[in-house]
Amino acid sequence: DIVALVALFRPGPLQSGMVDDFIARKHGRIDGPIDYLHPSLEPILKPTYGVILYQEQVMQIAQVLAGYSLGGADLLRRAMGKKKPEEMAKQRSTFVEGSVARGVPESQAAHIFDLMEKFAGYGFNKSHSAAYALLSYQTAWLKAHHPEAFMAAVLSADMDHTDKVVTIKDECDRMGITVLPPDVNASAYAFVVAGPREVRYGLGAIKGVGQSAVEAITEERKANGPYRSLEDLCRRLDLNRVNRRVFEALIRSGSLDSLGVNRATQMARLPAAMQMSEQATRAVEAGQVDLFGLAQPSESDSEASAVAVPPQAEWSESMRLAGERDTLGLYLTGHPITRYEKDLARFVSGRIADLLSDRPSQGAPERGYFGGRTASIAGYIHEIRKRGNRTSIVLDDRTGRMEVTFFDEVMQRYRELIVKDALVLIEGQLRFDEQGDTWRMAARKVTELDRARE
View (cartoon, rainbow, N blue to C red):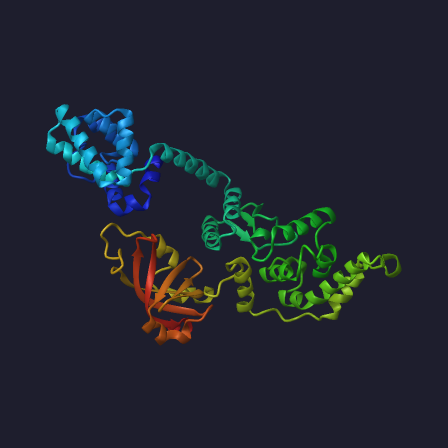
Protein backbone atom coordinates (compact mmCIF):
# COMPACT_ATOMS: atom_id res chain seq x y z
CA ASP A 1 0.00 0.00 0.00
CA ILE A 2 2.81 2.44 0.81
CA VAL A 3 4.50 1.71 -2.53
CA ALA A 4 1.25 2.52 -4.36
CA LEU A 5 0.65 5.60 -2.20
CA VAL A 6 4.03 7.06 -3.16
CA ALA A 7 3.21 6.62 -6.85
CA LEU A 8 -0.29 8.05 -6.46
CA PHE A 9 0.46 11.09 -4.32
CA ARG A 10 1.86 13.27 -7.11
CA PRO A 11 0.31 16.19 -9.03
CA GLY A 12 -0.34 14.18 -12.22
CA PRO A 13 -2.30 11.29 -10.68
CA LEU A 14 -4.07 13.61 -8.23
CA GLN A 15 -5.31 15.86 -11.03
CA SER A 16 -6.22 13.01 -13.38
CA GLY A 17 -8.82 11.44 -11.11
CA MET A 18 -7.02 8.10 -11.05
CA VAL A 19 -6.45 8.38 -7.29
CA ASP A 20 -10.19 8.45 -6.64
CA ASP A 21 -10.60 5.53 -9.05
CA PHE A 22 -7.86 3.54 -7.29
CA ILE A 23 -9.42 4.13 -3.86
CA ALA A 24 -12.90 3.20 -5.04
CA ARG A 25 -11.66 -0.05 -6.57
CA LYS A 26 -9.53 -0.94 -3.54
CA HIS A 27 -12.53 -0.61 -1.22
CA GLY A 28 -15.02 -2.28 -3.57
CA ARG A 29 -17.02 0.88 -4.22
CA ILE A 30 -17.64 0.08 -7.89
CA ASP A 31 -20.44 -1.77 -9.62
CA GLY A 32 -19.41 -5.21 -10.75
CA PRO A 33 -15.98 -6.80 -10.98
CA ILE A 34 -12.79 -4.89 -11.83
CA ASP A 35 -12.16 -4.66 -15.58
CA TYR A 36 -8.62 -5.79 -16.39
CA LEU A 37 -9.04 -4.89 -20.10
CA HIS A 38 -7.97 -8.37 -21.25
CA PRO A 39 -7.72 -11.70 -19.40
CA SER A 40 -3.96 -11.92 -19.99
CA LEU A 41 -3.46 -8.58 -18.20
CA GLU A 42 -5.09 -9.59 -14.90
CA PRO A 43 -1.81 -10.80 -13.30
CA ILE A 44 -0.19 -7.47 -14.25
CA LEU A 45 -2.99 -5.13 -13.14
CA LYS A 46 -4.51 -7.03 -10.21
CA PRO A 47 -2.06 -5.58 -7.61
CA THR A 48 -3.23 -2.06 -8.61
CA TYR A 49 -6.93 -2.94 -9.02
CA GLY A 50 -6.90 -2.57 -12.79
CA VAL A 51 -5.25 0.87 -12.74
CA ILE A 52 -2.08 1.31 -14.81
CA LEU A 53 0.04 2.89 -12.08
CA TYR A 54 3.66 1.94 -12.69
CA GLN A 55 5.89 2.32 -15.74
CA GLU A 56 6.83 -1.34 -15.40
CA GLN A 57 3.18 -2.25 -15.99
CA VAL A 58 3.23 -0.44 -19.34
CA MET A 59 6.27 -2.47 -20.33
CA GLN A 60 4.72 -5.75 -19.16
CA ILE A 61 1.48 -5.09 -21.06
CA ALA A 62 3.46 -4.43 -24.25
CA GLN A 63 5.38 -7.67 -23.77
CA VAL A 64 2.40 -9.89 -22.92
CA LEU A 65 -0.20 -8.43 -25.27
CA ALA A 66 1.84 -7.29 -28.27
CA GLY A 67 4.99 -9.42 -28.07
CA TYR A 68 7.45 -6.60 -27.43
CA SER A 69 10.95 -7.52 -26.38
CA LEU A 70 12.17 -6.11 -23.07
CA GLY A 71 14.24 -3.52 -24.95
CA GLY A 72 11.32 -2.66 -27.21
CA ALA A 73 9.01 -2.24 -24.22
CA ASP A 74 11.48 0.18 -22.65
CA LEU A 75 11.53 2.20 -25.89
CA LEU A 76 7.73 2.35 -25.71
CA ARG A 77 7.91 3.60 -22.11
CA ARG A 78 10.34 6.33 -23.12
CA ALA A 79 8.24 7.34 -26.11
CA MET A 80 5.14 7.67 -23.94
CA GLY A 81 7.05 9.77 -21.45
CA LYS A 82 8.28 12.16 -24.15
CA LYS A 83 4.88 12.26 -25.94
CA LYS A 84 6.32 12.81 -29.42
CA PRO A 85 3.39 12.45 -31.90
CA GLU A 86 5.40 10.83 -34.70
CA GLU A 87 7.01 8.32 -32.35
CA MET A 88 3.69 7.53 -30.69
CA ALA A 89 2.03 6.91 -34.06
CA LYS A 90 4.79 4.43 -34.90
CA GLN A 91 4.46 2.70 -31.52
CA ARG A 92 0.67 2.54 -31.83
CA SER A 93 0.96 0.74 -35.14
CA THR A 94 3.52 -1.72 -33.74
CA PHE A 95 1.43 -2.38 -30.62
CA VAL A 96 -1.86 -2.91 -32.44
CA GLU A 97 -0.30 -5.14 -35.09
CA GLY A 98 1.46 -7.25 -32.46
CA SER A 99 -1.71 -7.58 -30.39
CA VAL A 100 -3.84 -8.56 -33.39
CA ALA A 101 -1.27 -11.20 -34.30
CA ARG A 102 -1.88 -12.70 -30.83
CA GLY A 103 -5.63 -12.83 -31.24
CA VAL A 104 -6.62 -9.50 -29.67
CA PRO A 105 -9.35 -7.61 -31.58
CA GLU A 106 -7.96 -4.46 -33.23
CA SER A 107 -10.46 -2.15 -31.52
CA GLN A 108 -9.60 -3.60 -28.10
CA ALA A 109 -5.86 -3.30 -28.78
CA ALA A 110 -6.29 0.35 -29.80
CA HIS A 111 -8.35 1.04 -26.66
CA ILE A 112 -5.72 -0.53 -24.42
CA PHE A 113 -2.98 1.50 -26.12
CA ASP A 114 -5.02 4.69 -25.52
CA LEU A 115 -5.27 3.85 -21.82
CA MET A 116 -1.56 3.06 -21.64
CA GLU A 117 -0.77 6.37 -23.32
CA LYS A 118 -3.03 8.25 -20.91
CA PHE A 119 -1.66 6.69 -17.73
CA ALA A 120 1.97 6.51 -18.86
CA GLY A 121 2.18 10.27 -18.44
CA TYR A 122 1.40 9.78 -14.76
CA GLY A 123 3.15 6.44 -14.27
CA PHE A 124 5.95 6.20 -11.74
CA ASN A 125 8.88 3.81 -11.67
CA LYS A 126 7.90 1.06 -9.22
CA SER A 127 11.47 0.50 -8.02
CA HIS A 128 11.66 4.19 -7.13
CA SER A 129 8.31 3.94 -5.38
CA ALA A 130 9.52 0.94 -3.40
CA ALA A 131 12.69 2.76 -2.33
CA TYR A 132 10.72 5.82 -1.19
CA ALA A 133 8.17 3.56 0.53
CA LEU A 134 10.94 1.81 2.48
CA LEU A 135 12.31 5.17 3.57
CA SER A 136 8.78 6.27 4.54
CA TYR A 137 8.32 3.13 6.64
CA GLN A 138 11.67 3.60 8.38
CA THR A 139 11.04 7.27 9.18
CA ALA A 140 7.50 6.50 10.35
CA TRP A 141 8.97 3.92 12.74
CA LEU A 142 11.49 6.45 14.04
CA LYS A 143 8.76 9.06 14.47
CA ALA A 144 6.60 6.61 16.41
CA HIS A 145 9.32 5.16 18.67
CA HIS A 146 11.84 8.03 18.97
CA PRO A 147 9.68 11.12 18.38
CA GLU A 148 11.95 13.72 20.03
CA ALA A 149 15.09 12.62 18.17
CA PHE A 150 13.20 12.31 14.90
CA MET A 151 11.61 15.76 15.09
CA ALA A 152 14.92 17.33 16.17
CA ALA A 153 16.55 15.82 13.08
CA VAL A 154 13.73 16.98 10.79
CA LEU A 155 13.89 20.52 12.20
CA SER A 156 17.68 20.56 11.77
CA ALA A 157 17.43 19.38 8.17
CA ASP A 158 15.16 22.32 7.27
CA MET A 159 16.35 24.95 9.73
CA ASP A 160 17.33 27.32 6.90
CA HIS A 161 13.76 27.27 5.53
CA THR A 162 11.46 29.21 7.84
CA ASP A 163 8.17 28.09 6.29
CA LYS A 164 9.13 24.44 6.78
CA VAL A 165 10.26 25.06 10.36
CA VAL A 166 6.84 26.60 11.09
CA THR A 167 5.07 23.54 9.68
CA ILE A 168 7.33 21.10 11.55
CA LYS A 169 6.92 22.99 14.83
CA ASP A 170 3.15 22.78 14.40
CA GLU A 171 3.55 19.01 14.02
CA CYS A 172 5.62 18.98 17.23
CA ASP A 173 2.77 20.79 18.98
CA ARG A 174 0.30 18.23 17.66
CA MET A 175 2.54 15.40 18.93
CA GLY A 176 2.85 16.96 22.37
CA ILE A 177 6.52 17.83 21.88
CA THR A 178 7.57 21.24 23.21
CA VAL A 179 10.09 23.20 21.14
CA LEU A 180 12.08 25.08 23.79
CA PRO A 181 13.53 28.51 22.96
CA PRO A 182 17.20 28.81 22.01
CA ASP A 183 19.54 29.19 24.99
CA VAL A 184 23.28 30.01 24.99
CA ASN A 185 23.66 27.71 27.99
CA ALA A 186 21.78 24.73 26.55
CA SER A 187 21.53 24.92 22.75
CA ALA A 188 23.82 23.38 20.17
CA TYR A 189 24.19 24.49 16.55
CA ALA A 190 21.30 22.24 15.44
CA PHE A 191 18.08 21.25 17.18
CA VAL A 192 18.68 18.66 19.91
CA VAL A 193 16.64 16.52 22.29
CA ALA A 194 16.33 18.37 25.61
CA GLY A 195 14.34 15.78 27.53
CA PRO A 196 11.18 13.67 27.31
CA ARG A 197 8.82 15.38 24.82
CA GLU A 198 11.22 18.33 24.49
CA VAL A 199 13.40 19.63 21.65
CA ARG A 200 15.78 22.56 22.11
CA TYR A 201 15.95 25.21 19.37
CA GLY A 202 19.30 25.34 17.57
CA LEU A 203 21.44 28.48 17.67
CA GLY A 204 22.29 27.90 14.01
CA ALA A 205 18.65 28.46 13.09
CA ILE A 206 18.77 32.07 14.34
CA LYS A 207 18.98 34.58 11.50
CA GLY A 208 22.23 36.54 11.66
CA VAL A 209 24.04 33.96 13.81
CA GLY A 210 26.57 32.06 11.71
CA GLN A 211 28.25 28.73 12.34
CA SER A 212 31.53 30.33 13.45
CA ALA A 213 29.75 32.35 16.13
CA VAL A 214 27.84 29.30 17.38
CA GLU A 215 31.03 27.25 17.55
CA ALA A 216 32.71 30.01 19.58
CA ILE A 217 29.77 30.06 22.03
CA THR A 218 29.50 26.29 22.47
CA GLU A 219 33.26 25.63 22.62
CA GLU A 220 33.79 28.24 25.35
CA ARG A 221 30.78 26.94 27.29
CA LYS A 222 32.12 23.38 27.11
CA ALA A 223 35.60 24.47 28.22
CA ASN A 224 34.71 26.86 31.05
CA GLY A 225 31.11 26.24 32.05
CA PRO A 226 27.82 28.09 31.59
CA TYR A 227 27.61 31.84 31.08
CA ARG A 228 26.47 33.82 34.12
CA SER A 229 25.50 37.13 32.54
CA LEU A 230 25.61 39.17 29.35
CA GLU A 231 28.83 40.76 30.57
CA ASP A 232 30.34 37.35 31.28
CA LEU A 233 29.35 36.22 27.78
CA CYS A 234 31.01 39.22 26.13
CA ARG A 235 34.10 38.86 28.35
CA ARG A 236 34.68 35.23 27.40
CA LEU A 237 34.04 35.37 23.66
CA ASP A 238 36.21 36.55 20.76
CA LEU A 239 34.34 39.57 19.41
CA ASN A 240 35.89 38.99 16.00
CA ARG A 241 33.79 35.82 15.79
CA VAL A 242 30.77 37.03 17.76
CA ASN A 243 30.00 40.61 16.76
CA ARG A 244 27.33 43.07 17.86
CA ARG A 245 24.85 41.90 15.22
CA VAL A 246 25.12 38.36 16.60
CA PHE A 247 24.59 39.51 20.20
CA GLU A 248 21.53 41.53 19.18
CA ALA A 249 20.06 38.51 17.38
CA LEU A 250 20.72 36.35 20.45
CA ILE A 251 18.96 38.84 22.71
CA ARG A 252 15.95 39.36 20.42
CA SER A 253 15.50 35.62 19.88
CA GLY A 254 15.40 34.96 23.63
CA SER A 255 18.68 33.05 23.66
CA LEU A 256 19.91 34.99 26.71
CA ASP A 257 16.71 34.79 28.76
CA SER A 258 18.28 32.18 31.05
CA LEU A 259 20.81 34.77 32.24
CA GLY A 260 18.13 36.27 34.47
CA VAL A 261 17.76 39.73 32.92
CA ASN A 262 14.97 40.76 30.57
CA ARG A 263 15.64 41.44 26.90
CA ALA A 264 15.22 45.20 27.13
CA THR A 265 17.87 45.42 29.88
CA GLN A 266 20.24 43.15 27.97
CA MET A 267 19.95 45.31 24.86
CA ALA A 268 20.58 48.46 26.92
CA ARG A 269 23.67 46.94 28.58
CA LEU A 270 25.14 45.46 25.41
CA PRO A 271 27.23 48.50 24.29
CA ALA A 272 28.98 48.80 27.67
CA ALA A 273 29.56 45.05 27.93
CA MET A 274 31.09 44.90 24.47
CA GLN A 275 33.19 48.01 25.05
CA MET A 276 34.69 46.49 28.18
CA SER A 277 35.56 43.30 26.30
CA GLU A 278 37.04 45.25 23.37
CA GLN A 279 39.23 47.29 25.73
CA ALA A 280 40.58 44.09 27.25
CA THR A 281 41.31 42.63 23.82
CA ARG A 282 43.15 45.76 22.68
CA ALA A 283 45.19 45.80 25.89
CA VAL A 284 46.27 42.20 25.35
CA GLU A 285 47.23 42.93 21.75
CA ALA A 286 49.23 45.98 22.85
CA GLY A 287 51.14 43.98 25.46
CA GLN A 288 49.74 46.05 28.32
CA VAL A 289 48.50 43.12 30.35
CA ASP A 290 51.05 43.24 33.13
CA LEU A 291 50.87 47.02 33.48
CA PHE A 292 47.11 47.42 33.58
CA GLY A 293 45.85 43.91 34.39
CA LEU A 294 43.38 43.91 31.51
CA ALA A 295 43.91 40.42 30.10
CA GLN A 296 40.57 39.26 31.41
CA PRO A 297 38.13 41.68 33.04
CA SER A 298 37.20 40.33 36.44
CA GLU A 299 33.69 39.37 37.48
CA SER A 300 33.57 42.54 39.59
CA ASP A 301 34.32 44.58 36.44
CA SER A 302 31.40 42.84 34.73
CA GLU A 303 29.13 43.64 37.65
CA ALA A 304 30.21 47.28 37.58
CA SER A 305 29.31 47.62 33.90
CA ALA A 306 25.92 46.04 34.61
CA VAL A 307 25.25 48.47 37.45
CA ALA A 308 26.08 51.38 35.15
CA VAL A 309 22.88 50.64 33.18
CA PRO A 310 19.84 50.24 35.45
CA PRO A 311 17.22 47.55 34.75
CA GLN A 312 14.82 48.47 31.97
CA ALA A 313 11.10 47.81 31.69
CA GLU A 314 10.46 44.67 29.65
CA TRP A 315 9.51 45.14 26.02
CA SER A 316 5.82 45.04 25.17
CA GLU A 317 4.49 41.68 24.02
CA SER A 318 4.27 42.89 20.41
CA MET A 319 7.90 44.09 20.46
CA ARG A 320 9.10 40.87 22.09
CA LEU A 321 7.27 38.72 19.57
CA ALA A 322 8.47 40.86 16.67
CA GLY A 323 12.05 40.19 17.79
CA GLU A 324 11.40 36.44 17.74
CA ARG A 325 9.80 36.64 14.31
CA ASP A 326 12.70 38.64 12.85
CA THR A 327 15.39 36.32 14.23
CA LEU A 328 13.67 32.93 14.23
CA GLY A 329 11.22 33.45 11.39
CA LEU A 330 8.35 32.50 13.69
CA TYR A 331 6.76 33.29 17.02
CA LEU A 332 8.01 30.89 19.68
CA THR A 333 6.82 32.14 23.07
CA GLY A 334 3.46 33.42 21.85
CA HIS A 335 1.62 34.75 18.81
CA PRO A 336 -0.12 38.09 18.11
CA ILE A 337 -3.33 36.30 17.17
CA THR A 338 -3.54 34.22 20.36
CA ARG A 339 -5.70 36.74 22.18
CA TYR A 340 -8.25 36.59 19.34
CA GLU A 341 -8.52 32.80 19.06
CA LYS A 342 -11.71 32.45 21.11
CA ASP A 343 -13.50 34.85 18.77
CA LEU A 344 -12.04 33.68 15.45
CA ALA A 345 -14.46 30.79 15.00
CA ARG A 346 -17.30 33.30 14.67
CA PHE A 347 -15.97 34.99 11.55
CA VAL A 348 -13.43 32.77 9.73
CA SER A 349 -13.99 29.78 7.46
CA GLY A 350 -11.29 27.80 9.24
CA ARG A 351 -7.67 27.75 10.31
CA ILE A 352 -5.21 28.30 7.47
CA ALA A 353 -3.53 24.94 8.15
CA ASP A 354 -6.87 23.14 7.81
CA LEU A 355 -7.73 24.99 4.60
CA LEU A 356 -4.31 24.19 3.11
CA SER A 357 -4.60 20.49 3.95
CA ASP A 358 -7.90 20.15 2.09
CA ARG A 359 -7.47 18.93 -1.48
CA PRO A 360 -10.42 19.36 -3.87
CA SER A 361 -11.31 16.42 -6.09
CA GLN A 362 -10.88 16.54 -9.84
CA GLY A 363 -13.50 18.82 -11.38
CA ALA A 364 -14.34 20.53 -8.09
CA PRO A 365 -15.47 24.19 -8.48
CA GLU A 366 -12.49 25.41 -6.40
CA ARG A 367 -10.01 24.24 -9.03
CA GLY A 368 -8.68 26.40 -11.85
CA TYR A 369 -8.04 30.09 -12.36
CA PHE A 370 -11.72 31.06 -12.55
CA GLY A 371 -12.90 28.67 -9.85
CA GLY A 372 -13.20 29.23 -6.14
CA ARG A 373 -15.53 29.78 -3.22
CA THR A 374 -16.10 32.66 -0.83
CA ALA A 375 -14.14 32.32 2.41
CA SER A 376 -12.72 34.37 5.28
CA ILE A 377 -9.35 34.01 6.99
CA ALA A 378 -7.63 36.01 9.72
CA GLY A 379 -4.05 36.53 10.81
CA TYR A 380 -1.15 38.95 10.76
CA ILE A 381 0.50 40.21 7.59
CA HIS A 382 3.84 38.42 7.53
CA GLU A 383 5.05 39.71 4.16
CA ILE A 384 3.99 42.12 1.38
CA ARG A 385 4.96 41.54 -2.27
CA LYS A 386 4.45 43.79 -5.30
CA ARG A 387 4.03 42.36 -8.81
CA GLY A 388 3.06 44.87 -11.49
CA ASN A 389 -0.42 46.18 -10.70
CA ARG A 390 -1.03 43.39 -8.20
CA THR A 391 -0.02 43.22 -4.56
CA SER A 392 0.07 40.00 -2.61
CA ILE A 393 0.58 39.35 1.07
CA VAL A 394 1.41 36.29 3.15
CA LEU A 395 -1.11 35.94 5.97
CA ASP A 396 -0.08 33.96 9.09
CA ASP A 397 -2.57 32.71 11.69
CA ARG A 398 -0.08 30.65 13.75
CA THR A 399 -1.25 27.38 12.19
CA GLY A 400 -0.03 28.19 8.68
CA ARG A 401 0.51 30.79 5.99
CA MET A 402 -1.48 31.60 2.86
CA GLU A 403 -0.84 33.95 -0.05
CA VAL A 404 -3.57 36.54 -0.63
CA THR A 405 -3.66 38.59 -3.84
CA PHE A 406 -5.01 42.14 -4.12
CA PHE A 407 -5.94 43.57 -7.48
CA ASP A 408 -5.31 47.29 -7.84
CA GLU A 409 -8.89 48.41 -7.16
CA VAL A 410 -9.13 46.41 -3.93
CA MET A 411 -5.63 47.48 -2.88
CA GLN A 412 -6.48 51.16 -3.30
CA ARG A 413 -9.60 50.72 -1.16
CA TYR A 414 -7.78 49.03 1.73
CA ARG A 415 -4.25 50.40 1.34
CA GLU A 416 -4.12 51.82 4.89
CA LEU A 417 -4.86 48.39 6.38
CA ILE A 418 -2.30 46.46 4.31
CA VAL A 419 0.70 47.07 6.55
CA LYS A 420 3.33 44.57 7.66
CA ASP A 421 2.43 42.92 10.99
CA ALA A 422 -1.15 44.26 10.89
CA LEU A 423 -3.83 41.90 12.25
CA VAL A 424 -6.64 41.63 9.71
CA LEU A 425 -9.69 39.64 8.65
CA ILE A 426 -9.82 39.05 4.88
CA GLU A 427 -12.81 37.91 2.85
CA GLY A 428 -12.29 36.78 -0.71
CA GLN A 429 -12.37 34.09 -3.36
CA LEU A 430 -10.50 30.97 -2.25
CA ARG A 431 -9.27 28.78 -5.10
CA PHE A 432 -6.91 25.86 -5.56
CA ASP A 433 -3.91 26.78 -7.74
CA GLU A 434 -3.14 23.59 -9.66
CA GLN A 435 0.20 24.88 -10.94
CA GLY A 436 1.42 25.78 -7.46
CA ASP A 437 -0.44 22.83 -5.89
CA THR A 438 -1.76 25.03 -3.07
CA TRP A 439 -4.63 27.28 -2.05
CA ARG A 440 -4.62 31.02 -2.71
CA MET A 441 -7.10 33.79 -2.05
CA ALA A 442 -8.11 36.84 -4.09
CA ALA A 443 -9.14 39.49 -1.55
CA ARG A 444 -12.40 41.42 -1.77
CA LYS A 445 -12.71 42.92 1.70
CA VAL A 446 -10.30 43.68 4.56
CA THR A 447 -11.23 44.47 8.17
CA GLU A 448 -9.04 45.21 11.17
CA LEU A 449 -9.26 42.27 13.55
CA ASP A 450 -10.14 44.49 16.51
CA ARG A 451 -13.02 45.98 14.55
CA ALA A 452 -14.20 42.56 13.39
CA ARG A 453 -14.59 41.51 17.04
CA GLU A 454 -16.85 44.45 17.88
